[in-house]
Amino acid sequence: MDSAEGGGGAAVRGRRARARERTWRELRAAALQEVREVGPAGLALRSVARRLGMSPAGLYRYVDSRDGLLTALIADSYEDLADHLEVALGTAVDALPPRERPDPSVAVIAGEAAGVAARVVAVGLAYREWSVSHPNEFGLLFGDPIPGYAAPAGGPTVDAMQRMGLALARPFLEAVAVGALHLDAVLRTPEVLGPPEAFDPMLPEGVDRALGPFLLLAWGRLHGQVSLEVFGHHNWLFPDGCAALLRADLERTLHDLGLVPSTATGGAEVTG
Amino acid sequence: MDSAEGGGGAAVRGRRARARERTWRELRAAALQEVREVGPAGLALRSVARRLGMSPAGLYRYVDSRDGLLTALIADSYEDLADHLEVALGTAVDALPPRERPDPSVAVIAGEAAGVAARVVAVGLAYREWSVSHPNEFGLLFGDPIPGYAAPAGGPTVDAMQRMGLALARPFLEAVAVGALHLDAVLRTPEVLGPPEAFDPMLPEGVDRALGPFLLLAWGRLHGQVSLEVFGHHNWLFPDGCAALLRADLERTLHDLGLVPSTATGGAEVTG
DNA sequence: TACAAGCGCGAACAGCGTTCACTCACCAGC
DNA sequence: GCTGGTGAGTGAACGCTGTTCGCGCTTGTA
Image 1 (spheres, rainbow over the protein chains, first blue to last red):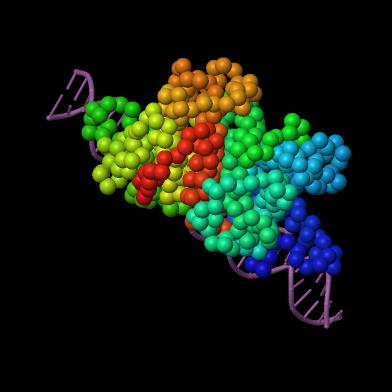
Image 2: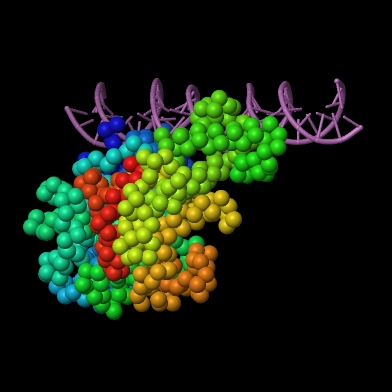
């Protein structure tokens, strides 16, 4: 019970705590592997236990329930996705081996519209690429929600999710900071803006509040294409066209904003 | 086995065949109710059997497997969604009791840009409304796909899905027919258009092939907003803003196309 | 050295999807 | 009108699942 999220909250004091942490890490890795192979719905605790050479009951020292394990995996997957996005943005370049680093032509030229546009395209294509190459984890994050579960506000799930969201939003935040992005009146109605503090948990202080709904809108456009592709609704006619279609959508959206895309968008192949 | 999709394919000859058809209908209704209450992942054949006062094994006279039942429900749900969209478009008005009929101000003014725009908004909001009010069925259609299942080309799943897609596309097809919609060059690259026959199963003959990717793009934009809302990723900041946000997105997209929305978009409340 | 805490185990329970042999009511042909 | 075949529905069973419980055994602390 107290080990709700499993992890060794304590310091790395004893050998025991270290062993616990290691086991917990292996458990998540095994479970994630299982999810990769059979999907979130097919995840079986007993199978994970077998993988670890452990008894099924033993897992309950680390996990509250099957759903608890799934939420831990959700947090991990959000982190993984956030990592990929940050790599595509050049934020976390140093953390990677050289051959996986993004094309420097898309790296930070913050302040210039073309640079911002290229970064929007890069992060959008990275979002797609991670999703297409991790379909079951994508389903874990964005498919049927775990019934009855609501992520606790301070929990690791929400933290990781916000980190991912921040990576997605970063190019737009930069664009706003340098005045390259002008939000029109469509998003300024009270129905869309909500109460003044509505987007406080999402936006830094001092940023135009209309950026909140705008970011949700942009995320929705991106996510829709990706979701339909990953779940097999977009690609039954023409499987290979989805990436190009998404790029076209991103460019349309950018054009819609007055931000012209740079031609150097090769950074999308980063994680390939 | 032979009863793969369960239904009574035979004519209504004997009393027996009629009974079978009735049971099959009740089975699907009970299962759909179960899905509404516990979600697709929670659907239990034994529970459905209990609901029908039947033995679990008896269900296998009508269904191949649990997944087979789910796919039957998928087809039914697509039909239901298609019905709602057609109602919102005024196509199937006569089939409904008067108080559920759409605002006539959005009904067919085909050929006029404002009318087309209003119809796009109406069908988009209807898509959202059905999804929000049928979250578990939405999950069934667009959440994690049934692992290992691919809908057979001639099957009822694909048929129903195409009917739904056609309803979504109708306003755009009309717009093209009357020359109110001009697709720009962004969607005309070979990567997006694919081979010449790529969109043949989707588009009527003689229609500009660039409409194919365009429709996927529009569906993706719409679907993304709805999917994020229904699965709880959009509305944690500001739960009531999603409808307005979607409307804003639709209007942005329309503006992007040079189609100005009419002010009489109240048809969205149709199914409420 | 004594004690508490925590890890892991085996057994068990209830529920699940699915199969199998079986009964019984219906329907067609003599 | 009787009869044989067909098909709906049953009950028991198998193997799987998530989860709980009480037990030993190891570890860390006083």
